[in-house]
Length: 165
Image 1: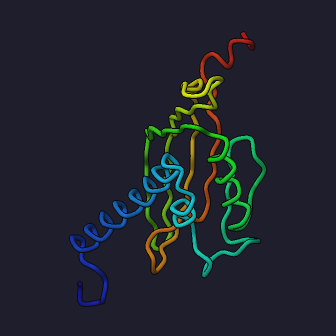
Image 2 (image 1 turned 60 degrees about the vertical axis):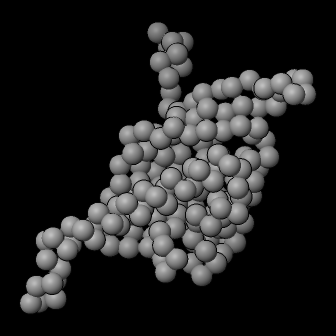
């Protein structure tokens, strides 16, 4: 520390790097929980009851969905996604993170591979790929970095705009 109580450049840089690593780990934990279909871990990735209730405190926008507010609506949305998705895998690219005090912003592209129900038992269902650009806003809590807001927007592929030509 400097004489005026501020962190010196080296210490501040190490603290900033540690925060960035922790935020990126929290971001990865969300997607890994989704891939496992672990609703409890998904809930744990979000702000807890001390910071959010069933009416507010957290916000989530899945592609094509209305704005969801509060832990009850957000948890229900993930439960519905998990119940209706046999398989999902996320390949995150273009991951960028910024930390400003007790708030962190992570943007990324979710390259998603998912599968639905198969027509015949014991067979794999059809696999579908898609891209979503996501913004994940985190807050520092005593329990670590927790998701405050998630907003996903679909990315149009080159084939999607062929009709306009």
